[in-house]
Length: 237
Image (cartoon, rainbow, N blue to C red; front, side, top):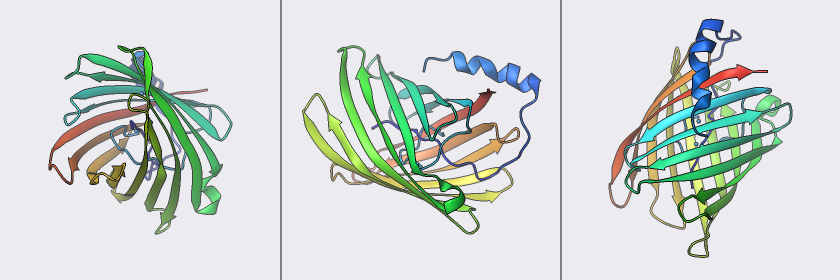
């Protein structure tokens, strides 16, 4: 299951990007479209991006030998839509992903949030839907919302094998001081041995740009690799 997930920003500022920075970052929206804000993370949060805005991300996974780009749009409602392109270098192919998230209970002011997150992956080479998924993300804040816990429960359906598997995931993220945040997660699909990922995030330019670096490793095989990503919010309307 591809993700991406729009992680909650722990370091906040009411300021917006200067017009010069908006002009510099706007071309990123022209990238082919699939934060999982900080897109490399697999566990989804029960939160949405800013209303009336577009966020865009691009990241590379050394473990997956793939590069990803996405754009997420939210209007005024309690839902958002993400479109993504996955370029798999080792298979010389591209996949398209469409995701949607709907909040059943918003994180503020209740202290916890619950939502629905689902989507599908389209295999362009075979011209068919390869995978679909649906899960329930739960997020709760602790220590005056300096630390957040994310819990995911759901399922993944493989259309090629006509097979359904469960998915679970746990993640913790918290402020480390200044613009820096730490993220750690563990997740598994279909009863397989879990994989874990841990990383560092910098939130800069008045909360409008995020830079992520993480390491992901499979518990059973020991195979792992680095992932690097950049997320921006260049448009508010």
